[in-house]
Image (tube, rainbow over all chains, first blue to last red; front, top):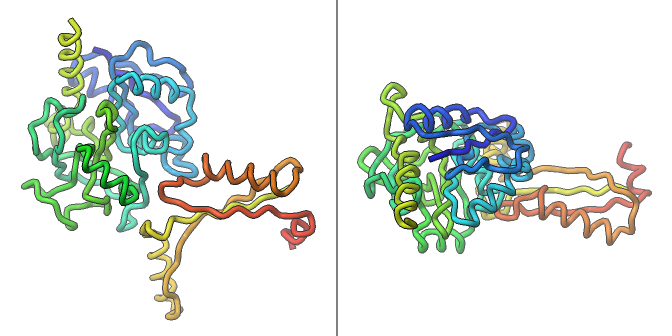
Length: 236
Length: 89
């Protein structure tokens, strides 16, 4: 299977995602420059973390106009799996591929720490290899990860089971004290209605080997591999 | 001609930066400060057009890019020539 990792000017987690896909999982991975217009035959696309276009105007606001985003949108519309990590999640929100928006963390600070994250849904291309309600230890590193959606949209997201990850404590319990940024409903990640586009603020690719402090995140990219194999079998 | 766009977070969206600024002002001794909302300000230089057309154009720009309608609201002002000359003063 082949992953495409999009590189925006200002991406800084592109090589982490590339490394996790190619070295940890042993799959094909290719870096794709934001000015490219095709995804080079990839089976899954990763929009990595960082500060695309300097986060000018709003996080992700300018990246949405990068030429590669037309190809990403077409790929997503056809059901291709797309994962937005941190800044990549913010890009997906600004591009309208996922609902809602990000605002500044409620405690103003940039937060960089390992946090427990509970898997809420296991029927997306990036979570089928996870156990239901599994609590993963994943690093977060962001200043604007405070997820917001208007009440009616939030209600729809919950009703459609689009919340894929939530911030919890180590036992998987939700509480204000374990919500690192003030996100509504402790939301750490969501998917679109078709469930093929997933965005999350935590960095699974930075927690893909024990030497990095946690290997829990490996399951996220491993899910995409399993999802692709099962899709091939379904269509065989 | 010139247009101004003021972008602020919607009243329903918590503005942590505004809160910190308000707290700092109170700490400075401005006890009468009740709240601060922080926003963005854009000045757009445009080719000359009639004010109604210019306002429609800039409103479209605000909708498409300058503001994120999910969390922000905005206000557009088109400056007439007489007002423009006062801008620099």
